[in-house]
Image (cartoon, rainbow, N blue to C red; front, side):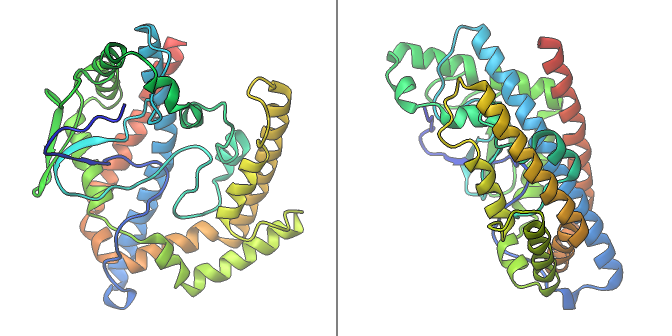
Length: 333
């Protein structure tokens, strides 16, 4: 059930992994060497925050789902149980990211430690992927009073947002619930939810980057991309020419496998992890992620320098939240 309050717009205020945002800020010719050093440092912190947030979101989604299950709700709408939507009174831009095996905007090689444990995160048994597969028909078929009860249990309201935590960004407001499974989980994981909203909005709606355009125009990144693809071809992955295609290939391992066939899913996961590990190793060899950070930091130096403190604070907040969410998940399990 996709809830909208009359007179408001829905504004995405969270991020997972990486970003598709709305325009670069500054050319590399305008940045002094000292500013470039700061920009690279900020970009590295931002990339680290994205990686940590992806892991936090996975644990957070499981916590919310367990909370709802404990209240008797077993069927969910297609938007699942994540906290990726805030209600905004005004206009704004979001990061538009997903989790699991979905395409990520920057199309980079996975980190080695991630590749060796979860691959690209494409396994449909991961919670973030399960919710994407659920049928909206099952939820829509529920009686209206059950759907309204579901809304109350999830967010603490039914028809219009009320009593949530708000952040005024100057041109409007964004809000997340303070009640229900979603609000309670956010509070338990982040503590200061208003600070979470403030930093999230600043980082993903003020530090704007059009990553696809930046990387396409950067010779250093394109050279690294060619080296990475050649390395993967030597490893036997001849059809993988871009990181996006690598993730598409990972999803293909799971195609047409019944959900209950654990042995087949385990084999697919091993194939995914094997490919992701080769991807990560080739990425390190070619310096793919480093070249991407350099390209983005050059193109967005002014904004990165201006907001380095907020980006660093966001990294610290997300890292702590990831640890807390995973700790709570272990306790509830």
